[in-house]
Length: 483
Image (cartoon, rainbow, N blue to C red; front, side, top):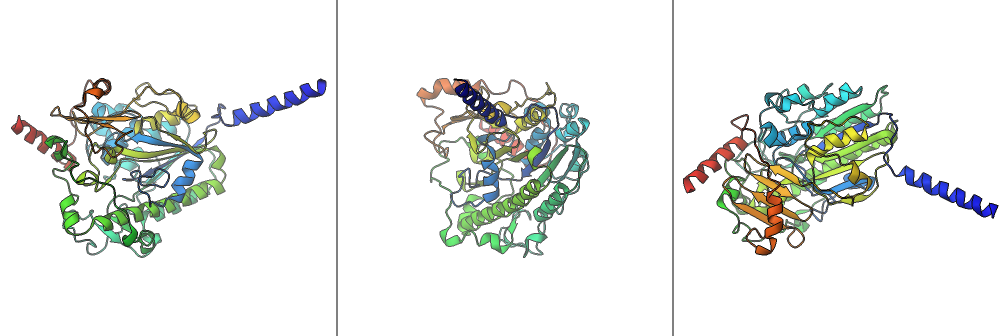
């Protein structure tokens, strides 16, 4: 009997140790944070299945060591407002930052918040970063990222002459360029990150690495294009009458005064496959740079005590809804990868709860044992990192100018435009959002529940002159004429 009790005691101890090892550490020692942003990355990564041919072994292996949020939504389908929300945990309709400008410091609401990097600096962290972490306008990253190391060339390098035949904005270009990976800013960023992660640091660190690809110009060296031969390349699934059940306002707001090629131009010039190929090539290229950063983390001193967060600022269309680029409230324009890995986080789990980019700030505060900020509008994802099936009462909200919102739940997506028109999709039966069900009576109750999530107040639009502002103004003017 004594022998049996001893065996049971040892077994209980083993179970207890195993159970505790899968939980987020509660000790007060400060963990490090590696914060990786990828520009314009949609769900075209292997582990998310957005494109069946996408090759992203490094993002996939990061997901295998943490939690992948498969229903994560951006705060706005444009770089500046979405990244401002990441750094403040405030919605665009709260701050007035809806489009490509202004900066956080120009919003009377946002400026009162401590941006994430400076909060960590105030808490005793060594904070540094490089690349595109906030919007890329001059001085913005330097203002908000302590010890900012630079852009390393930004969206460059640029060829002497455009590669594509598209006559529009110089950034809207795609194809094979330059010759070597080493010429790409993202390669240089990864090299900088490798060096930092290999150095001795006497404080816990918050490190931001902001990669530029697959943002336009969608350039990458030849070897990345060779991974996606045109003859076997698959195009996104589309239907011919996709826009028939969408209001004119809903169509216009994603198209007016924008600089991307139109769907008709792309088809007329046989550029659909080259555009898809260029995007996938850029995704695989940046995935390799992410892999270099992860390798450096694992080889150095900090791999076991570092939380890694990887996210994108918004989605990107490649022919879906008869359009290219971002700037839409459909899921192709708003769904983003979010992967979180680190000490005590479940490995290889997927979570389909509706989460948002502005949840990242409060999540990292909790993971780092820091006090929450009551001004934050996001919610810590720590409960989901512990148990991906736990109760989650929140919806996700995406905004594209006052009055224009997408509200996402676990199964449904509701969209409301400033002219009062609406869309509603059931992702269980229609994951591509081809059929607007807003007039279907059987969905009336669930649609009403989503309508209740629309914000009750909106801050005025700040900034002026960007294509976002112009699109909104033009759409509003057309709506007024049609009333």
